[in-house]
Image (cartoon, rainbow, N blue to C red; front, top):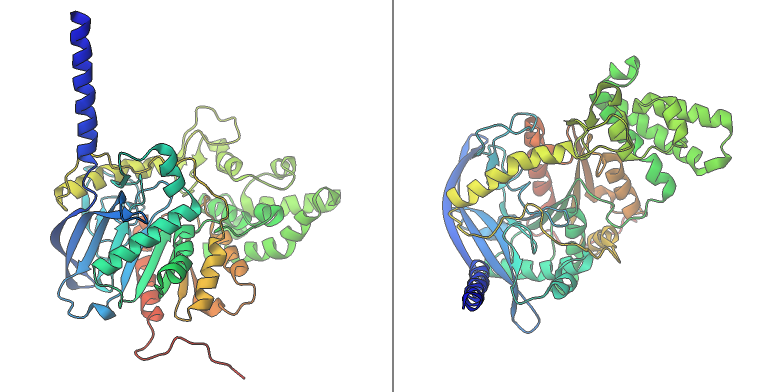
Amino acid sequence: MFRKKNIWIALFLSIGFVAHSQQINRAMDSTVTTYGKVVVKGKEVKYSATTGKQPVWDDKGNIIAGLFYTYYQRTGIKDVSKRPLVISFNGGPGSASVWMHIAYTGPKILKIDDEGYPVQPYGIKDNPNTILDVADIVFVNPVNTGYSRAIDEMDDKTKSETFFGVNQDIEYLATWINSFVTRNNRWTSPKFLIGESYGTPRVSGLSLELQNSHWMYLNGVILVSPTTLGIERGTVPGAANFLPYYAAAAWFHKKLPADLQSKDLVEVLPEVEEYTINELTPALSKGGFLSNSERRQVASKISRYSGLSVEVILEHNLRIPKAFFWKELLRDEGYNIGRLDSRYLGIDKEAAGTRPDYSAELTSWLHSFTPAINYYFKNHLNYVTDLKYNMFGPVRPWDRSNNTTGYDLRQAMAQNPYLNVLVQAGYYDGGTDYFNSKYNMWQMDPSGKLKDRMDWKGYRSGHMMYLRNEDLKTANDDLRDFIAKSIPSEGMPAKYNRTN
């Protein structure tokens, strides 16, 4: 009798658990709207904030997922046909659209100090630098990030095949954007995509997918801390191109020789970039056939620009892995430096080793962002759910095959004379380093015919350059300038003109 009773209790609890899990994940098409205001450049900007889920449909019209988003729209605008729309993604893959939402372009930002470190009490405050004065913004969370989820009935294999890959991600997000633009009557608005980190191949691929499959033509794509974008770097550039970043990190931590240290960062870096292109890359191309005298000469120059010893550089055959650099630069002081922002310091269990025990910068960011975003949705945007907000959600394994996103962006630009590109990068980012973001641009369009429609901006911070208050202002102003530049004058045709 006791055993039978336990079976019924277990059955009751399991039914209750299933019902509860379905209940908290069933609202695939519902939103809540609140209103707010923020002062930007001395003027009050009033806005609506719509947050909730919009479905992803399959080819038969069945809902297969609900994507969580927050849409900020300036109120009082009579003609949205001239009002730019910025569609924002973060990366990972598997990262929620939280970082740029409450630290960069949105009307609220989290409470941190001027350099980006967490402070208590946690919370949010007005963002006087938001681009909401010049553009409406929607922050989109792909499946399994934020509160976005596939339907409960979908098994893991189907989820993976449908959502978790370079091209799967681009395909379903393009259909979602189409639905969003249609629902919100934004087809005639100038449209921009902004993506950070893995969000950069996402928006690069979307630029062509939206054109070719949805006939939606963009005005601009903004790449914040871009990845490789599927552009092959090769073993030699892959090793050589890290040196300018090493120099930036070493300069910040005062590890360069006195003559370099006495210069400003942006005076030092062009010298290192020139050496990387014209001397280091050819030297590394010789590999093991580099003479001993040449090898020592190159090691000495790498040491000068990286802050590492000649001996260590020779031990690594002139090719310093990034993880080792993060461990080695301040080893004698008992610290490692951050991967995505090398201004941050970490403490390892042992001074020995070839890589840090953890990412000092990421733990710091999660420390400040997680409480702030959970508080913000519930207490300011009135979005209440029992779902867990996934700062980083389960999206592995991620299918990285056939990644042509950088070249897709070039093709989209070629097909669309209105389309412009802005790259933003932090000098102290070791994960997606600034020099390789330039290299991407150079390789993306070997003809050079599109270079006048590509801009690059660097900042004195890391992967999320906007966490540093000074760069927050500058980077948002750069976005404003780019948006204005990328909207053609009224009546200007989208066409190429022969110059001869």
